[in-house]
Image 1 (tube, rainbow, N blue to C red):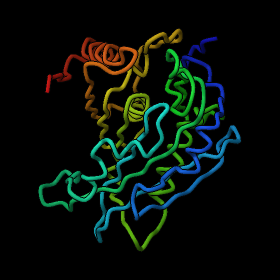
Image 2: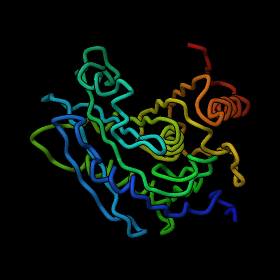
Image 3: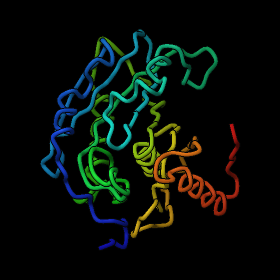
Length: 255
């Protein structure tokens, strides 16, 4: 059932009790400075997101973080990104303001092209690679991320300001794969840095694998470990090797 242009068909909805519970606790107990919002995607599903704002009177970069499969947005507390949100300089200048705002869209409960138990649950559909914004059949996860970013960038607020030229993507595991794929197919993303992502184009057991065909050559840093579940590190290494073989100017190093 592979599609010629976009790989796998759209993931099938798989609503479970645990994901329903997690949705209602989308941003609970993460920070005191949170704005939440939602919208209904073209599938009719309600999608949520939360924005954690740093306390600054100056425009700050925006970091969009995509949670891993089977784990909610609160898993960001394991990454160190919250602790750096008022300390890191992502402005690109040595005297730029410190800190960044964090936007966390929420995925869907669907089927995944992973072995059990990761074959279903909350996450991101990086196997249906339709990033054509003029197509009514656009990947609804792309639609949700687009909406969340646009909502934040176009909302006027007295509490925070965003540097629209410094929008970054990050994510963990399945969220990392989606962040890489999104950054490679979306204009206006300054860079992406992800942890332990599987190959977003030719992952484990992907019967609809494709060659990467990025429309945007966004700078990306991929950090993979030895080793995540179901050999994710192997597919991550293969993805980097594949890009190196075709573009020949990437840098890979052990840290």
